View 1 (cartoon, helix red, strand yellow):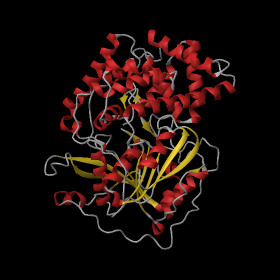
View 2 (spheres, helix red, strand yellow):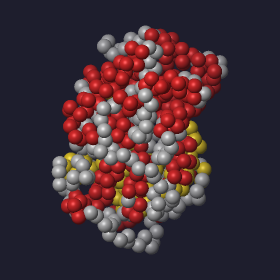
View 3 (cartoon, rainbow, N blue to C red):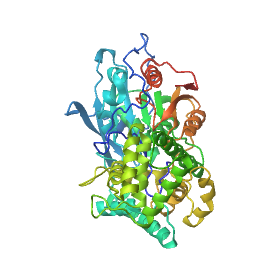
Length: 517
């Protein structure tokens, strides 16, 4: 499970400051972009045997997707069971988008992609085509994205009004009093109850296991005997779960910005706190090197930022939106977003300067709104609903709120600025009122073809340690390392990474385990 800190810590590919959530290339590392130098092998893989499908699910696997034009791409709807234990019961629809391969004669196959979240739109992700996946993959693959059940254009969760979600996300991620603790508990419980009231049984059926089963139905409907998969961030959890459930159906699988699957959840919370602190410190050092207003050394900059968050907690800052002051919760999201993408660091510096020196929270609120998909008209998607519902469906452990203060010390040791905020993430699902239909299993993917696990050394949202761990958890895991900042590795300007991933997907060339770029 990915931690939900106070209200929201997502793990998805976030780029594009002009829009609210778009998907495109952001180059951090400064290497030349990769070119389509990889070619498919002259002797393609022998065809895999036809997978066995339970008789009661055969009609879902055999459905023909009715593709229609949507802009320059093709769109369709996939029908799947709401509850795989009752395939003759209610069904839901999954939105699917396909970008055709640029070179149909050399087409390798269909690459199914997911950007993470939970709550990220695979439809939007795939629609980025070459701008997101590079010239090589766009040339040789149909790129297929889908919105997971509960998300976006698929049969979607609805849990709250815009005003209710605003209140939820603006709540105090670091409650100082019993009254604040109880208020957060009430807000979380009410949010979950809203999911049940507005979405019915769907709220119980959005687990990663069910999404992975949908992916296999999609594979069948696409006419493929095996799956080629590119999952970023939480998309690595979908991919790893798929490999556990359907190992023989894995052909090629890239898990970029990897999430460990078998670690204790409280340890993952500590790891993620450390990851965000590591990313924050990298940003602060860069800021200090340029004469940053936050101080003369790292310790002073950390203390000043902590003091700012405490001040905003006590007295929210005015913004350009009169009824939406900058609370501590919103300030934290505004800080988190630029840590995902190094090219956003100057935006964070200016937003912090405006807030700390001028008392104006407008720019930090703008960054927070991009993180949560908030537009002037409301929320662009249902990322918050999906993030909570999926994470809590997958969660097997939650710390009671009353016990969280006992854990402050271990978080303070690794994340002095964010310690208490992440510590309260331990209790996120303690107040969630929905019992899921399926729980995520332990993962080893035994029997799957080689799976490429990719980690970035200073990734905030999916710490590099998780990539090491996942590559060991998976029986056929192969680790590829990007030494860099920001979230995920592919198409971040590191030609070594891009070429290794492209050669693996297009030509089946597996890099040496532990290759570092």
